[in-house]
Amino acid sequence: RNQRVSPIPSAPGARGYLFHSGMLSGFQPVEQDAKLLGTLYVESDLGALYARARLYALIVTLVIGISLPLAYLMSRRLQRRLSTPILALAETARSVSERHDYGVRAAQTGIYEFDVFTRTFNEMLTQIGRSEGTLQEQLGRMGLLHQITRAIGERQDLKSIFTVVLGRLEESLSIDFGCALLYDSEARILTVNAVSANGRAALPAIGIEDHGSVAIDENG
Image (cartoon, rainbow, N blue to C red; front, top):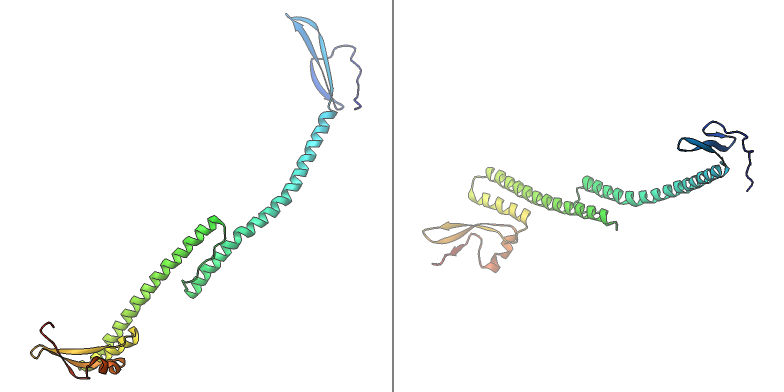
């Protein structure tokens, strides 16, 4: 390499170092026991230092130039991978909210963390569905009781009341046979007072006649 060579000063200068024209130069006295032995002159070309600094700057620029697009591409890929299961889970929640269909289940994504969350979400839907089913059953029973109570209030005779009760039970519970019997404690017999609509066809097979009597033995 070509290096600049400066002439050696004819006389020592002031103590210290200074930068000038891309060079570093300075004078350093050499003493022993407070006696000046001489002066050390140092001069260095900073061209190599500047060249190395430019090389480092170029390397940093290249690293940043490559890293930024690579980071952008990776973030886009990760964003799709992370946002897809979240959007699918949100769509499942929206379907449940709009249709009140608790049988819908979120699909597994293959990502462990999201699969744990998905399983928890599906278990929650299962619990809500069971609670909803129990609530609907209770509401159905309350509605049936209300219908029976209102129908009983509209009738006075016992046979009409039994007929309405059996009819409501047949409609709501899908029973195959239903009948109401009156017990005579003195004669110890049961008398058929009312029979459901579907139950009339089964009377001959059971051996009971409409408005007939059923004897009770000693064992009841």
